[in-house]
Image (cartoon, rainbow, N blue to C red; front, top):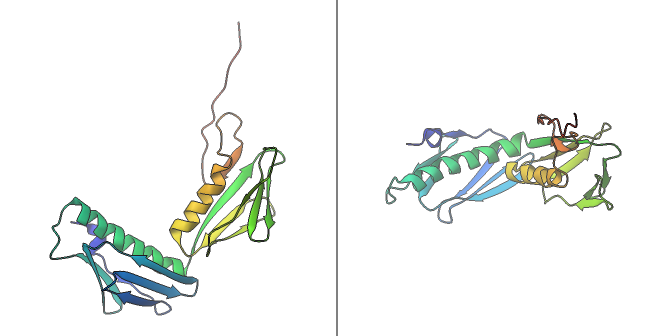
Length: 184
């Protein structure tokens, strides 16, 4: 049985939840924005006493897929509630001589050692900011979109282990390699 799926999701007073069981769709609205999610057909989602409860349908068998979707659905809805109240953010840092990021209106321009700048546009609902020291902060209410856009920025120049240059998450540790050693 899913231990995560059994836990009810508490809904704060600043969040409104619109639960449409016939279309298997939930809409969560809060101070940071609105999010929607369509859950799997083998899962039931209902509202009870100011909380949201997920369970497996009686008609569905409790196989591996059903149990996995049960925990996944509960986690996705929990992330939506946290996202519209607190929001999510990822911090990236650029390490390299002359490498930087610039704000170009709705786009971010990366100069990371290529002969051309790289322009990236965030998806709707995702914002970014560039600090004085060159750190990039990606933030928004949707955990998946924030993480995906941060990964897209990081993919433009992944950190490499020999010189330690690249775009990396703020708390990421790059294990350095020694490189070639020439000797007699």
